[in-house]
Length: 143
Length: 143
DNA sequence: ACAATAAAAGACAAATTTATCTTCTATTGG
DNA sequence: CCAATAGAAGATAAATTTGTCTTTTATTGT
Ligand code: FES
Ligand code: FES
Image 1 (cartoon, chains in turn cyan, brown, blue, yellow):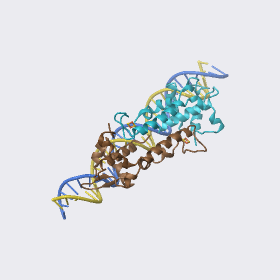
Image 2 (cartoon, rainbow over the protein chains, first blue to last red):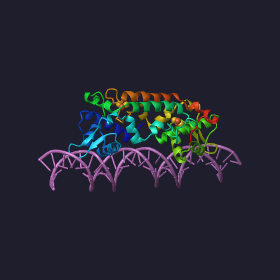
Image 3 (cartoon, rainbow over the protein chains, first blue to last red):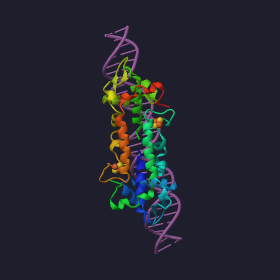
Image 4 (cartoon, protein in one colour):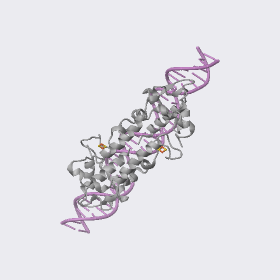
């Protein structure tokens, strides 16, 4: 569904959203441990998201990653778009070079519904929503 | 959503289903051309599906791939299962080692709906259904 | 039996994705 | 200003997926 990179990205950002809801920052090591991902790999991913303005970062002592008020309005779709591109939003489920209404693949109509459900979910889930859940052990980001 | 291998597999089998509805057989070259895939690559894929009994094949002159009555009752889910395993049917959308009701990821409940929709689609689509569409240029397997 | 045909199988190679390691740069507190 | 900290960046490597090439085996019609 998503690339491994994108899975880490989403988990990482959700983790950051939860841990920095109080305005603090969190270091890359804690993020990697928190979501069970390779440290340098998630670092690169977060750096790209930071460059694109999806999350914030700060170098030096007391530095780390965090989300500002603006970022909390971003959605999971923004992350997926940056990491995996728009394939999942508009691509053909059977891998045709492009999805098309006029030259549809045999599953086009059915795939479209699923794709739209995924889009809707990703677009309607804002990063700010993840601030509290984890602390109460209601949901998990690793196993 | 699916691996490239699995996309080719589905397109290939649908193509075979359409072209051999009359009881004939079709060669690997025609399949590769028909779905715009690398010839030897789709060959390996079809060989595996053949070993698993999802499709049939016959060596030698007048040989080729085809679907018998039994195979036409198979579903797209059978193909996906053979090629990509059960990740798409039961795996966690955020890449946790296993999806779990008791230790769910933050998107578990939403992902489950999507996963179930995909499962339902794949399980309810039988290979026999593809026998006529393509001939009338209603749907396409390459572009 | 024989030659032609077509899939099966296995080895190999390219490309992409995922992961690791090292060095550089910015920031902080003293 | 200086030393410590932590992210940024770039190079390298491993693993996986995707694609190609060659040889073998089964089947057919003559
Ligand atoms: S053409 Fe395949 S999903 Fe639209
Ligand atoms: S735990 Fe992530 S989808 Fe079930």
